[in-house]
Image 1 (cartoon, helix red, strand yellow):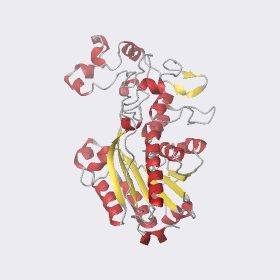
Image 2: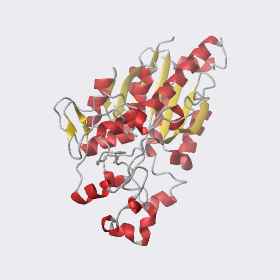
Image 3: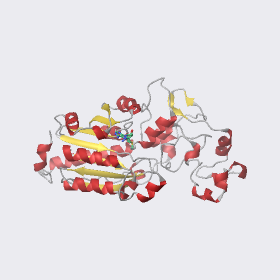
Image 4: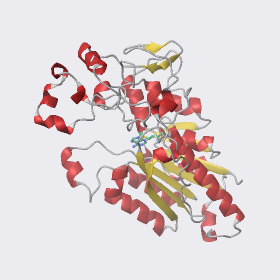
Length: 360
Ligand SMILES: C[S@@+](CC[C@H](N)C(=O)[O-])C[C@H]1O[C@@H](n2cnc3c(N)ncnc32)[C@H](O)[C@@H]1O
């Protein structure tokens, strides 16, 4: 196969990068502003971490990272900005929530990678910046595939829907077909991890650590059944805000997962019992950081902190919850490898040779 090089913008702890690498797409570098991501990114991937605001990345820098690669891939998952209720309701046209997607587009316009891939929450589709991004790709001559992907159809044991874009200057590209008819369940993913208690960590794995529970929350989780809600609890355990009418809007908090179903969407706060249906199916605790990472498709031994370094729930929860599931990264990688294989064998094919000088 040709000499391929991929750069991952907003690389985080490396969920997307890891999936791509496992499928044979060489990632040469990841770029992210968060220094805490350097360790997991570099410890698990033979790729360089560059701490930098993507806004300040120049086309020349990006070209240098690609070196003499024949196929240049630009991947990225631009984060959305924090939002107020007001902006959430009214910003669908002007899209202040994804300004960094314009930075992604800026680099595509100048560098013209052969393949571009982007992952994001489905909501991004409602924002003008998304249409602008797709229109830019099309104007530049890319063939664009885009859809909301149900990750359970690809072997992720978690309910997670994501917008995925695959764009190629070489020819038509699309995501491979679903690989799993029957979704994997929580038990398949974390059923064999050693039991631990709330507020403690396993001796052999500092990431297999579960957050502390207050006495009240311990009583609540004991009263919770898998798949149930706080409505199952005796009255005295129900929070005042739940007892009032408004409570009906939060049935999803304080729940236990079910062994036989996929996990709920892993958020950046999945380690807190009160933050969603993040209770362990049978142990009286929230799922551990390691369990969250596995439900996001990370391999069991993916290193997030150096041996002996402190484990910060908030920072690691953000890194893990924000990641592109490794499983989805693999599916994107497999789709790219198939595309390159197909295009290489369809001599001339749909490739637009006028674009080739753009490849270093
Ligand atoms: C959704 S996460 C990316 C997850 C990553 N793709 C993965 O699979 O693990 C978004 C990342 O963008 C980073 N970020 C936010 N603003 C940035 C900026 N201006 N330049 C570079 N990185 C930025 C955050 O630190 C965060 O790690």
